[in-house]
Length: 433
Image (cartoon, rainbow, N blue to C red; front, side, top):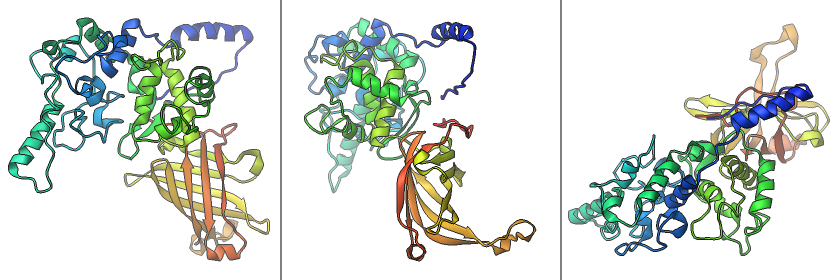
């Protein structure tokens, strides 16, 4: 799902030809008006901007029971995506978490209008909310059965044809939206990992954080704070970074930032008609600001340093799998308090976007013909951690133990960036699963 990019040097004339060719070949497909309407209908088809009447059908009490995203998720992945922990309540249907029904909620493959209409099968609009029965602490057989039945009703797709309210034009546009390749989850993400809490997101490797910052400033800062960390008075409450730090919110952001929110001032036109690239760029920038939503992956393998501020020391890092777990192996070429060269090694198991490591100082073997592996020792040096917010930015923290403090070592922490001007690992980051 990732794209490898290569840099070529051409003459001025050839560059001009290449730009014309590439703009025709690789320009993103513009969504039709029907696709945009279908995207809003996926959020809530009762809204006027979605082609609806602006009100709920007469017998519907809870709008979530007729919203596509309520079961399938903003990313269409159900519990395999941002809605991994979305269980059922009396006010909303079940995306699959917390019950024994393993029915796949992810939307897979081409979608037809008939599949959306669900004529003659499924539940009516109002079924579901009224069927909810809470599971009691000392659940009887009858209570357990009623509770399970409530889950089952909540999982059944509504019969939109029999229910009325939604129009055939809306259903057609929903199908067109769901078949629009540039609107699927992998237009934004190389990987969505629901096994951690919060869900971890790896952006497509074509994402450009600087471009994302520019797009956000030009099209979003007028309504949302120009500083995404601002916690005062802006929607979403607490600021954009606090919102994205919640479980699964990058999925919701990718939909709303691309298509807008029906019957609000947040329209595609007012947002600058963003492409999937614009949205991915913004999310990468926001990830780097907030440090949320990025997962460790083998593509972080490479040489890292603190730039010219600490030129002369750095970290060759190796990220890979051992026994089914992702491992970071780090080597730190640095200096002791007397100015002598010092070599540290560190190893740890990844958890999300962080690795806690044990650090050692190798010593013992002699140079050349006198080298004997049996002479080697790995003296415990201390502990540390590596945290990455993107494929090109991270942070390290190192803390020596008492013995190493006595030798003059102190706590050390600073930001890391990939040294890619001359050294490239050749491992794509983010690495597709």
